[in-house]
Amino acid sequence: MVKFMNYRELRNTPSAVWEALQTNEAVAILANGEPRALMLEIENDDLELVLQVVRRVRAQIALSRLRASAAERGANRLTAEEIEAEISAARARRKQPTKRPTKRRKA
Image 1 (cartoon, rainbow, N blue to C red):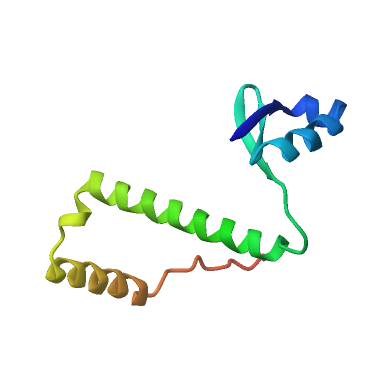
Image 2: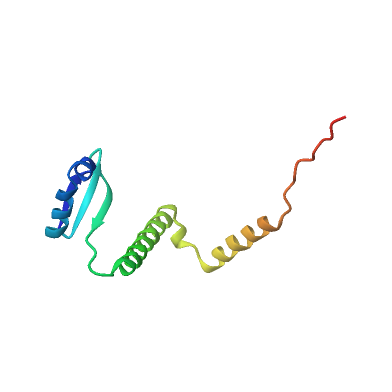
């Protein structure tokens, strides 16, 4: 269960946040009515483990967004040959020398 609290409560009555963490799974901090942060109670020395799990979940969310974007653009229907052609074209563009502006000497 998530308890929603305004960020002002965090600033003005931090004890209320600690109490909410003890009775709920998490506390979502709101700014202008929008969730901006999520607070979780961490037991013992689990900080690194919790951070690792959060990073994995963020990566999974990013991958889901990429897949959805690919589906919207139709990129999820490309054949292997079309994908290879795109890769080759990108590599060819990368190998092309870029033109640098010439410096003019002051007289």
